[in-house]
Length: 114
Length: 116
Image 1 (tube, rainbow over the protein chains, first blue to last red):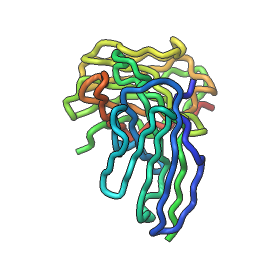
Image 2: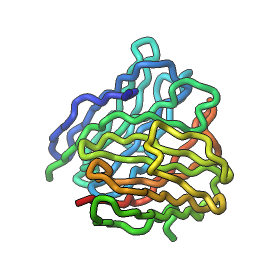
Image 3: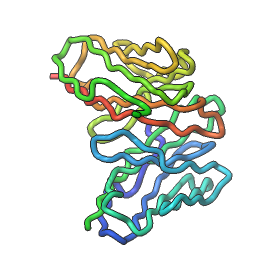
């Protein structure tokens, strides 16, 4: 079954605006990751946040994690046309023997218009 | 240099045929994966190999058989292709095997399989 679910499914914003998307998951986790997928391409890792962390930054990206609500958010500040992509959260299911078994949500499709 | 490469990029074939997709990584990683992404962009893990050893084998039909000749390669062979096999297949690799610290996975560009 699907572990992560992103919300919204699609988001359309203008350049310079901020984009926020949320991810909810069902089981406990060790860490949560966000990936980006440009159209017709493979996924690219953006950021990993561990279960004992609440917030993490990387450039224009800010990720929060609330394990009590089993949710995470990804904020892209000052968006650019190049940020147009689908964004996925992925969790490891909380097992110590997960062997990299990531469970992905269905993604949020972000369109940034000039 | 491409870190994770897959061939072919596109594969169009008839139902009932057997086909293979190849994957190679030059990152020196120990773990490789195959994922299937359906038309709704839902990505699901199929297999994972660590140092040529099968680690994850999700509920995938046994028509799908992964083969890892060495830790830099993980190929996917599909027998008796069906319409429902149409999807984009992604290969990925990671340094370790996840554990509690987590591992970044590096994805290939994908192979779009269309079964007619």
